[in-house]
Structure formats: structure tokens, C-alpha cells
Amino acid sequence: MQKILQTIQENQSHYTQSQRAVANYISANYATIPFQTLANIAERIGVSETTVFLFCKELGFNGFSDFKRVVTTYVNNFLPLNNRLSSTAANLCVEDAPGEIARCDTENVEATLTNPANLEAIPRLLDLIDQAKHIYTIGGRSANFFAGFLAFKLRQQRLIVSNISFEHGEFIDEAMQIGPDDLLIVFSFPRYTKSIVMLTQKLREIGTHIALITSEKLSPCSEYAELVLSCRTVSYSYVASYSGVLTMINTILTCRALRHEKDIEEYLGTLDNNLREFDMFYN
Image 1: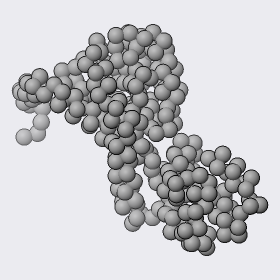
Image 2: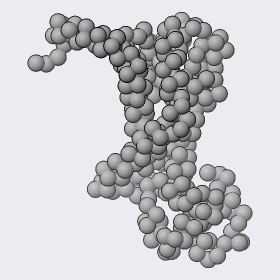
Image 3: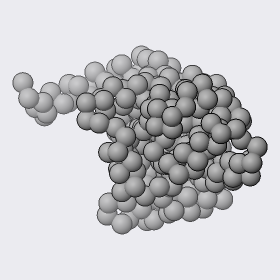
Image 4: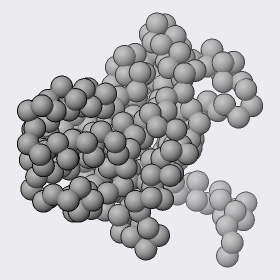
């Protein structure tokens, strides 16, 4: 974002009057752009939508949507939570929020599952899962929910999976059990948890296989992962969108189940019988 603002500043003297109006608005209000439409911005500046669109092209983007996505990533990664909430409240009303969030989440899911790099990486992750002596999952702060969920669902596929949790302060003790023949699946999203990066680096040094599930702006953990799956987490709210992450988890689970259909189907039948025997669910 700083590079964009610097480019705008350096080219001020070359802009037309309408371009200068767009430039000044972006420089002063870039934190609000993720929460606005092209039409909103054009109206507030007092120029046409085409003028705003062409200015984004002038900055080197494919158009306004491309520019908005980059700015949104910056805002989600670096602005404090209270600033993000203020921007959300100023530019997104309660009545419009459900539709905007639904549209954003849908775009995130589609971008995640049509990413060619992800489509290539998923079968490789399944190979690592099948070859691992023991599988571990880990994620800092909110990412720990996804790590725990994936571990839970993989255990339903007759796999030995442990989720390393920060809740009891024992993650270092648990991580010391991980060896070179094991697989660590790391979840890391902005703002990146420092201890997760440090742990990933240390385990990579001893030869542990590491797969990373992260955002489009890659986590620092990517330097130590042999396999990276990126999920778009763009959000026009102060809360990051994790729809793409959940879809990625569902894809991994489904693809592996299809690989081992007979074995998993048999195990699920046994599991279901045991759940019934323990009267687990409300009847």
C-alpha cells in the first residue's frame, strides 16, 4: 500500500484535475475502500465511475476490483481491529451487510478452489497424509479452530492425528514429539502468530514434512513449508472471511475419502455404531 501511495505522490503533477481528485481521495481514505463500491467512491469524489476505473489502470491494476482486492488485503493484514471496525461502520449499513458479505464469501470460495496452484497441491498433500507416520495440526489464535477441526475430521478417516493446542501452554512439549517421518499441517493467517512461525522453522530444520494452509498474502511460514495451499480471505468487514478456508478443508477431506472409499466407509460404519452405543446424540 505504501508503494501505491508513493506512486500517487510522485505523479501528482502529471494528473488531470479529475485524476488528482481521485488520487487525493485514495490517499486520504484508502482504509475505507474495502467497504465501498465503485459507484460509492465515484459519487463521493464527484467524478464518473470510468474515471476511477481508469485511474486504477493507471496505477497498474486490471481495474477497480483488482485494486480494491489489494487494498483490502493490506487493510485486513495491518490495520488495528478498532480501525477496521470504524471503517466498516462508516461505509456498510446493517441492511446491506448480508448481501455484501455473501458476495464476498462466494468470490473467496471460487478463487480458492479454481487456483491452479491449489489444484496441483491438493493431490500432493493427500500423498503426504498417506505417507506420514503421525499427523499433527497447529494454528495460532483463531487459526487453531481450523487446525482442530481438520484433526477431528481426519481421525474419522482412521488416521492418527493430533492437534497441538495453545490453550494449556504445552505446545512446546507436544511439538517436541514431532519427528522427520511426521507431517505437520499448519494454519497461518494475518496477523501471523510469531510462535507458529518459529515452531515451523525449527521442525523444518529436523526434516519434518510441513504443509501450510494460509491466505493469498503468504504467511512467513511459507519459507519453511514444502507444500502451500492459499485461501482467499478478502473481507469487506473488519472480520476476515474464512469461507475459502473451510471449503479447502472440506475439499481435502472429500478427496481423501474418495481415494480410500471402502476403508473409510467401513470405519465410519463402526464409528457410527459406537456413537449409538454410547447414546451420543439426541433422539
